[in-house]
Image 1 (cartoon, one colour):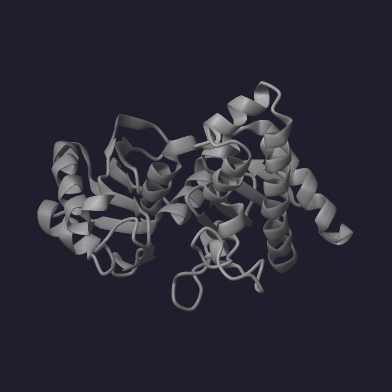
Image 2: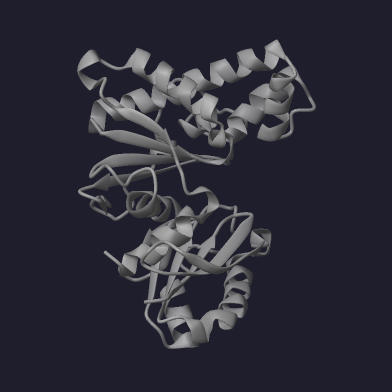
Length: 292
């Protein structure tokens, strides 16, 4: 079975043909142009999917935002994609191509991809978190996504880790206000104005910038504090962490060491692992909705 899978992100959208072995053919990536709004994003998606129509049996879509998987529509999306809330993705795509369509939240899709083809393959139960503009989360139980009463469980980025604070960088004092890559860059800029992204931060650290190393250490403390709480709540076998900055092995090791120092000894068996599928996880996870 060949699945045309798409992964709609705030910056880029990825498309490819996926099969049950995890192979991806005709992989393409293009700017989402999310600032132009949901209708524009959908029109661009339909235009690009048309080139895959004859090669696929079905279509799977991973997307930013909270997703009603039964109806295949966006329940809520923030301002990264204006006018996206309420978008009936499945209906729009099915009407255009006349093929089965499944829609999943991007972090849930990434978790499913890691479960079937990546770092989560040895585990029946694990958590998945992505650290980027915000912090996304997914809960895998018995190799399936746990969705909660309203289908939107796993909003780990909205844990209150600093409940007495007001706002941080214009954001409410949620976990992601302190532990996202956005938070890391904000903290780093206070030490060095040239630190405009994660790459700049770690390039400078490699050249011996001790001030930025202390910033990263403080950021890791924030990341570990949230993970420790999740370990105590879920008692997972593993936590898989992804996002651009988490591509670095040394950083994941530091996060694991700090988290272990915070959890009770009886929870010490948890593994913290780097996501292994990179930017293909969402495609493979969305496609795997047809393979389970």
